[in-house]
Amino acid sequence: MNAAQETLQVYERWAPLYPPVAHNPLMRIEQRAMLEAWPHVAGRRVLDLACGSGRYSRALLESKAAQVVSLDFCMPMLQRVEGSRRVCASMMQLPFLAECFDVVVSGLALAHASAVRPWAAEVSRVLCPGGTLLYSDFHPEAARAGLTRSFKDAENVTLTVPHQLYSVDEQVGAAVAAGLRLQMVRELRVGYELQEPFPGSESFYSQWHGLPLVLVVRAGK
Image (cartoon, rainbow, N blue to C red; front, side):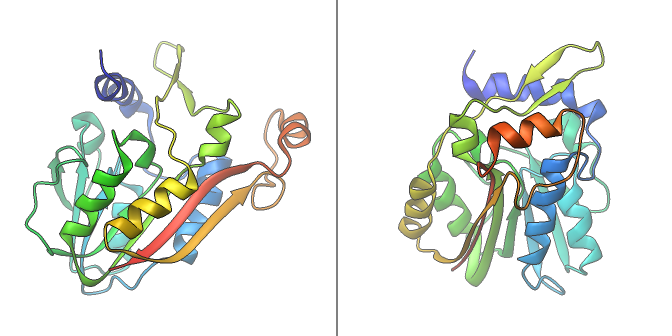
């Protein structure tokens, strides 16, 4: 089984339990940072790339985007998205014409890409001149330190989401190679942006203080 198939199987098992909201401390700081960097979307055509259960699709609709397209490779996740045009496809081969979106938003998904440069090239291809890419991801340094994104399925079995490791430099280089101009690179760290208490948080904060957990990138075309 390759990495894409393994990732798909994990998300198929997660989908019934995956709420379309930021449902843990990491996702809450990630979403806060994304909304702080939120591009102007009112009246514009927007792609929610690797949309999951649609939390950013919902935010885009609330922001009065003219058209929201929600794309994901996991049909059970996609079936939970409401209010937008839904497309089941790989984010590595986008089934859209060139320059058809004004904005692309993607939350916590880049590490599922099979290669970062082709991913950035596909995003750039579908972005209009003057368009904006805003994405977040689980920080490669957190993954390198051994932290994982895990969950319990309906049978209470713990599963870990597979992901690739792309350094910040690799991600920046991929964006630049795709013809995108970096506007913001922000790292969200334990004990700084992440301070919310949770079961076991005292030891977690003591052990991982200062470790970057989430990367948020904004770029223009």
